[in-house]
Image (cartoon, rainbow, N blue to C red; front, side, top):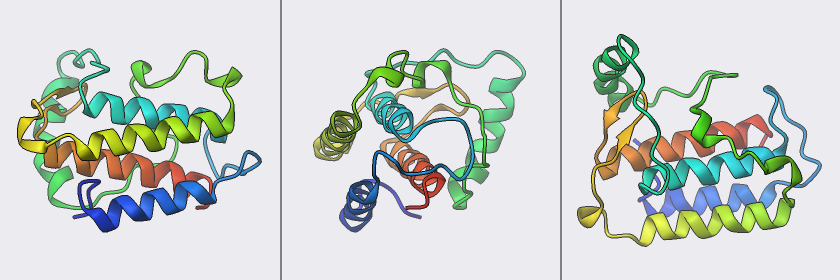
Length: 153
C-alpha cells in the first residue's frame, strides 16, 4: 500500500505537484487548484497534529472505527465530491497565491516525512479515530492523489 513515508511515493507526489498550473482545470468538485493545494496542506498538518479536528458524533464515529480496518487493508480511492472536515478548508484559500500554496504544501510534506515516525504521536482523525504513523502516511497519500487526479495530474 502506498504511503507518503516511502521515498519513491513521496517523489511521485512532488513530481505530480510540479505538473500543476494555476489554470489547471478540475475534473470534478468545486475547489480551484489553489484551494485544493491549501486543503492538502491542511490535511498533512492534521496528520502532524497541527490541526486537530473534532471527532464525528455517534453513530458516525462508530462507523468510522468499524470501516478503518477495511480502508487501510485495501487501497480504496476517495470518491469524487467526498465531504471533508471543515478544519481542512482554508478560509483564506480564495485569496491565496498558487505558487505560495504549492511551496507551502511541498514544505509541509517534507516536514511530515522528516519527522521520525516512531516519535510522532498517534493523532485522532475525525472519522477513523486514532491512527498510526503508517496509517496517516497512507491517508495523506490518498488525499494528495485524489486531488492531483481531480486536476488530471
